[in-house]
Image (cartoon, rainbow, N blue to C red):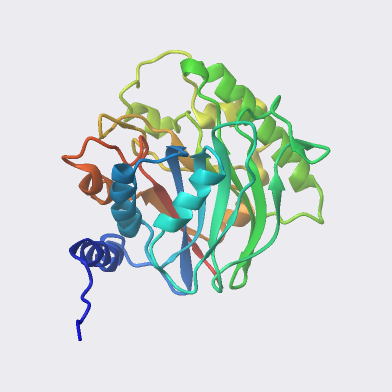
Length: 305
């Protein structure tokens, strides 16, 4: 009788996956806690086998067992979301996704761990008669209400339009999000713990200084846009986190694009946020013609008690 042994490729994926928590354990976090990951997957649709292999390795290194929730951007279609789910690390009891395919080729979504997080509602942030309102968001934003332990929160997954580098369009869409958030927080029936995550194509104030295009005029910071909006001062002030370069040009860090914005309620549960170690992604496509993504993932930790 023949005995079957795991393939070399499967063993490699498992080694990377089992080692992943070590790369995320540089600083201790209080228990109980969990991580929310955000990642622009880059035009994820009909993905080649070669790129799938690189992605599988990267996902195994990045999505560690303490990631209970993930926001993702740039999924092109149903084929793309199915491939993405297939490539996720085999963490039991598994994953569920919040995703709707639209006419846009860069849809946003939310992923969560079954048995670790629960989702009580989800949909498009801006919608008219159930359909996404693309006048406010070219790439329809996703919103959901989730609960992990005792921490329940509203989560927005977004990708502000790049519009050929016209940051004023990114600003216009962010302004719409700020208008929505200001109105949302005024209703006492709504959850005040809100997290907005994704690819903003805009920097934080500290992040702009660390970006390749630090000297570019007409590239406003998220912080300056929030100040100009004027709806979040004093006790309603928002917090913007992630200052490292997160876009990935020629497989190297370039500009500070990806962030989490926290309301005061969400900030009370907040522990820390950072760009995921770049080696987790660089190691997966180094020496290959394919690229995992043109962004590095970012991660935020929260208390769940």
